[in-house]
Length: 291
Ligand SMILES: Nc1ncnc2c1ncn2[C@@H]1O[C@H](COP(=O)(O)OP(=O)(O)OP(=O)(O)O)[C@@H](O)[C@H]1O
Ligand SMILES: N[C@@H](CCO)C(=O)O
Image (cartoon, rainbow, N blue to C red):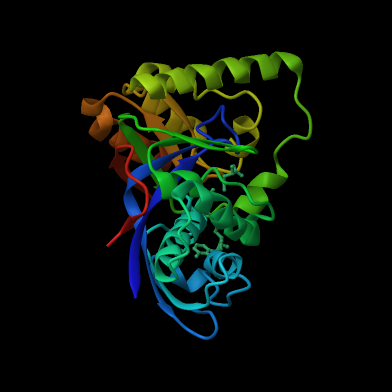
């Protein structure tokens, strides 16, 4: 039996759609695997009633298939599904690391990323790696077609999760089909600024680099209260605010001492729009850990 803790993540960070991600130090899924003739899945924890146990419809089923590693897989959800905090990816990442160990497959962490990404295809229709990469490797990650780079960094963050659900599948439908050259120029500049900020552990550069004229505006419309939450967080000292992953969570970068006030301001912003929410004051964390 192998047990793995796989962390929540925040993908995109505004300017890095389908490319950037960060591991959060909490919450996390716990994935426990034991060898079996056929893959079976049980799910407990936050939002487990919304998660299928059929291996063909759960991200971990696809991972077991990819690794040719049938197992009984117990998932204890700490990351709420349809949260924008990489819930489906945390399970997939945990299963990839756990099954690699259980079956002694000998794959490196980087080699496990595309395998876990196949799990994501089960729920969103496309095998994007921007959540599974940080959940497996930790830190800030850049996932592109030719591989993954990860950078250790120290950026204080606040993630605010409202009591509304936005599925990645739905949020991908509102992504525009085309982009103008001026918007592309802005996005490339912001992505480079954000990456520099991550390399220097500089929350001001990271926050500036979160702006995105292309995709976030369309997705923000799916999140009741987004504009209020964003402006309250910025007024309270956030260096940048954007949609976390496909939403509905909203993520803010900041200086360490401002996390509590920003979290409280974000809760107020949702509350004024009639939406309950919870807040996570977090840091960029490590990747999946074998317990
Ligand atoms: N092991 C799993 N954990 C969580 N959700 C799962 C799992 N397997 C399948 N799902 C399904 O995936 C959907 C949630 O994934 P989705 O990508 O929409 O949200 P998320 O992972 O929280 O968000 P994001 O990727 O934007 O951070 C739900 O419909 C859920 O039933
Ligand atoms: N990059 C993905 C992350 C969510 O799974 C998206 O924004 O659709």
